[in-house]
Image (cartoon, rainbow, N blue to C red):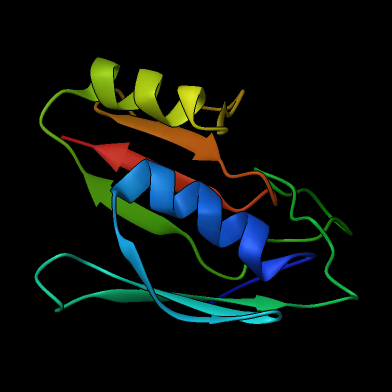
Length: 112
């Protein structure tokens, strides 16, 4: 579950990124499901949400969790993520991983 200022807006980003469909769709709560039905991801509106900093320094808001998404082609997957609304993080700690930030600032990693 990921908090954000707008659950529906963040869920729409992950719909575009992952190609998953909505299972629950309420104003402040959305759940996406993978096509095979095994995995799910939920989003909750949190009015007091504070965008995390990646990588966080002292006294900065830290990420609570991040997603790791395995891909076949790192460059193509990164381009797709940017096209649907992600930004590439300035700090990239590993060669075969690309850290991105979703529209609410949650880091997520694409890896091969």
